[in-house]
Every structure is written in C-alpha cells, then in structure tokens.
Amino acid sequence: MPRTIDYYFWMNSDWAYLGADRLEQLAARRGASIRYMPVDLPAVYARTGGVILPKRAPERQAYRVAELKRWCKRLGIHVNATPSFMCPDAGLASRVVIAAESMGVRVAALYKAILAAEWCEEQDISDATTLRAILLSQSLDADALLRLAETPAVQAAYVRNTDAAVAAGVFGSPSYLLDGELFWGQDRLDFLEEALQSEG
Image (tube, rainbow, N blue to C red; front, top):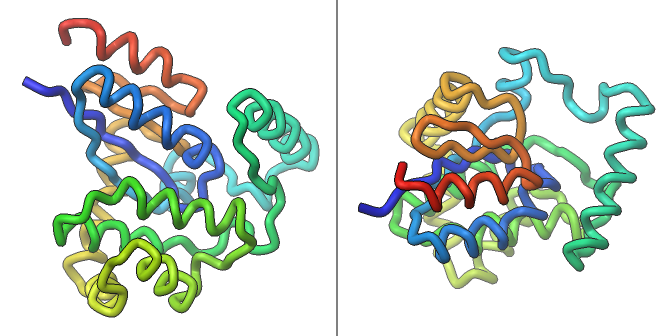
C-alpha cells in the first residue's frame, strides 16, 4: 500500500520552494503520495515559540540569507532572498491551494507557481489579482477558485491544517510527516527518503 507524506508548508516559505521538486521526485521514486497541507505559519509560531522573520535578530536574518545563497548555488535554483513583497499575508494563497485540491486539481504545479511569484518574480501573492493571473497561467478557473477560497468550508480546512500541524509537532516550514515521524526542513529530505525505503 502506498505510504503518504503529510506535507505542511507555508505559502511564503522560501525553503519550501527550494525543496518542492526534490520532494516530488523522491515521492515518485519511492511510490509515495503527498498530502499538501498549507498552514498559517504565524499561528503555528504563536503556539510553538517561533518568531516571524521580520522580528528575528539581525544576526539570524543575515545567516538566513547566507544559507539560502549556499543552497541556491548547490541546487542551481535562483531566488531573491529579500524580495520586494516578502512574507505578505499568505491566507488567500493558502486557501486557493486548498480550494484547488478540493476540486480535484493536482496542486503541485500551482503552489510552486505561487512560491515562484514571490521569490523569483517580485509579485505580491497576497493580492487577488496576482493570484488570478497565476491561476489562469495554470489553465484553472480563477474566478471559481477565488470564490471557493473565501467560503467557510475552505477557511475551516485551513484552520484544520494548522491545528493538525501543531498536533503533529510542526514548528516550521517545510515539514514532512511520515507514519508519525516528523522531518523539518528541505535539508532533511534525504532522511525522509531513507524512511520511505524502510518497510514502515
């Protein structure tokens, strides 16, 4: 029986963007499925002791930029470490992804396009017009998805994702849960793949 990776991520996460393709590749290699679960990371931080990026000490912010550059070089991926619209409200973008999945859309390409808009294309992903353009670029029904994203059902699903993340021990993005075992960070994907190689 295929094993499932519960993938908890923030729609503003540069690290989720760096790990996105590799997550899909390892899941394909190991015959695993991915359950995409966007979360409200500031709400997770509030309950787990985290600090949002703009409020972190300058030393921590500087190290983040240095580490991001190292990983970008290693992976051959370009991101702007300090984009013009860095870490805006991710609620609507997250709910759009949840809405799309509820309509049967395979959301891997969609969430990566939204992350790329922020970290590579200097776009404001909190803006509905920006999201509409991204949805159209994915050949999706933008108006229907934006409407669905505002419904109580999708809003409740977003809260459930966030609650489930905290219950699972998640405290940062990206986080991957396999058979109750948590792996935090795209730099732990090798460990996740090793776990998938085991019998479970």
